[in-house]
Image (tube, rainbow, N blue to C red; front, side):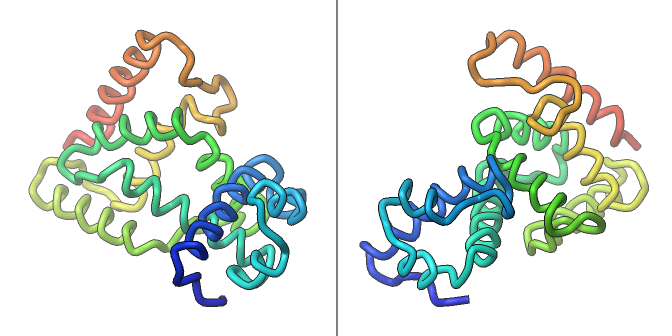
Amino acid sequence: MPEPPSTARGTATSRRILDAAAEEFARRGIAGARVERIIEAARTNKAQLYGYFGSKEGLFDAVVADCVDRITTAAPFDGNDLAEWAVRLYDQYLIHPELVRLTTWVRLERRPAGLLFDHPENHAKVAAIAAAQAAGTVRAGDPVDLMAMIIAMSCAWSPVSGIYTATPDEPEADHERRRALLRDCVRRAIAP
């Protein structure tokens, strides 16, 4: 993969490309996304896009990595309070539904089975869950399975829900009701 831009102007262009591509890929996946729409939305050209990211697939990988980093930063993880982490994820899915759609495209077009992301942050989360298990505050079981279950519960009202997708413009009371239910369900599910 080509080196990321080093100048402030190059960084701004790269950021515009990532943001435009995130929207395009979230809507249409890799196969349906068009470089022409991305460069138009990013106010750049193909030479810059390919110079920064190498290919459409390289751009998709960069977008996914960027989104994983953003959600990891926005929803801090605490192995001793997994219920609140689930609620923070719920809130991030409200603010950034494209993150959930992007991971769905990764599943559909790239990695249909197995671990979705082998991100260093996931290793730290698994270790924190294992430490909480060792301390007796979280139920026994495979820490990866527990993390997967908590993430799935936090997605109950996200764009991947087969039942209902929540939006930020709904009454805050609805969100608070869902947060309380999610918090309680996660606490019960992970109780020793």
